[in-house]
Image (cartoon, rainbow, N blue to C red; front, top):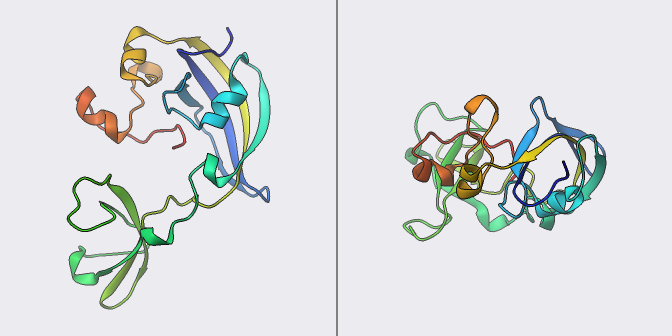
Length: 182
């Protein structure tokens, strides 16, 4: 079966930076609903459209086609007293870019530095500003179920559903990590 709109695609991948340094290699394939449902980057969908299981390709995505440019305005310095103990570099917190603005989307902020009375938080994706190389191998392609099309995402193997935080409320399930790259 060829990859087309409303097919569920399973893809093994290796992700490297522009210099070829390995960032991540999939233990489990990325599974997404093909056809503009934001399950993976548009450039990856474009490269895989019309292909069949066994197809292999390598492509480079510039920052604007991947996780975006690095935005220095998403770096915040907050009082240390606002955070729980223990606090360590690498911990993540959810928040809005501007205090009290509930209309803005929440971001995941990563603690990048801890001083005696200040904490530095970065709301950029860790791969923001980087050109990324993907080595992709199509493993499986199948027709999407009506339920998957209605929910606009693939349901994983063994009845496990692949969801993101936006789907948590509408599906009534727990949010999980999404192996599709966003």
